[in-house]
View (cartoon, rainbow, N blue to C red):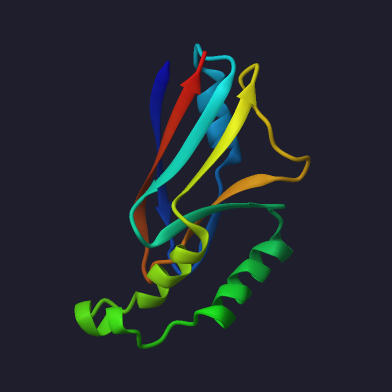
Length: 137
């Protein structure tokens, strides 16, 4: 059985990081599927998903890392479209738009300190959508 759900987020842009672990767990808890996998997928090309130990120090470290690796600036994409978010697209290409996790008894199998985070790399606030697809029995 496949069940699809959607999460909606309001973001600030500029590497805004949001812990979505509890949102996914909440969606999973209300399903008739007990065991399976969940695919989490971002709709859009300037935000990404990854996992980490979500705490303020690491949140700042992630932002600092991307500012060093791919700083805002002038990129070919910016020249083509004039939107100034070429760095956003490049940052996303390193992380990717989706993750998949197993679950048993309607609980995701994650490490003790592992949380699922959404990062909006765009250069302005946005309304975002994340698709959750649960596959299981």
